[in-house]
Image 1: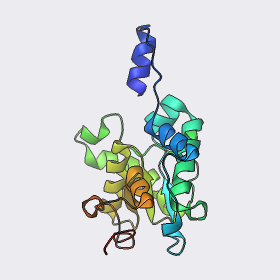
Image 2: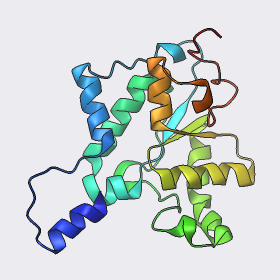
Image 3: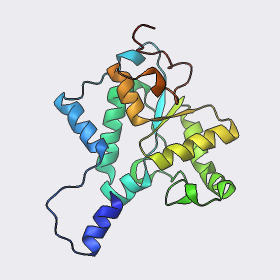
Image 4: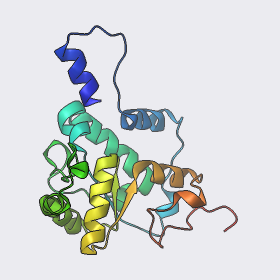
Length: 188
């Protein structure tokens, strides 16, 4: 998204389309009732979640409005009472250290060292899960948890949307902990 927008602006390319994030569309569809998510599955479980604000999406492209849409969707899916925001957050959130090609740069120790601030930020929430709407953030946050044996699970936003809809397949639960592996499983 950022690269497309920057390219259109830099080269003054006329276009007749709007660039949006899927998160903006999820929020719109939830508000309109087209995406009928709910958090009932987590009422008794009370599993706590936090969310990573991706740098490219929030800080560099759409700003705090998309961060608000992200929180709206997450709270609709896991329950407002089960959401714990990182501090700082939104446009001021810390970078996870995985973007900008760093994941593919072949310097895992440097990337992990940079990510310590993010790991501590996640740990400070006490959340059992960190929701990552960005692939680079997901890979980095998951790696930070795995390499240091931190207690949080890292999961994609879509995984929780599908879980809340009751349509998450058995093979799509790779990033869920034992506490959620069988939630809303039909026939289980």
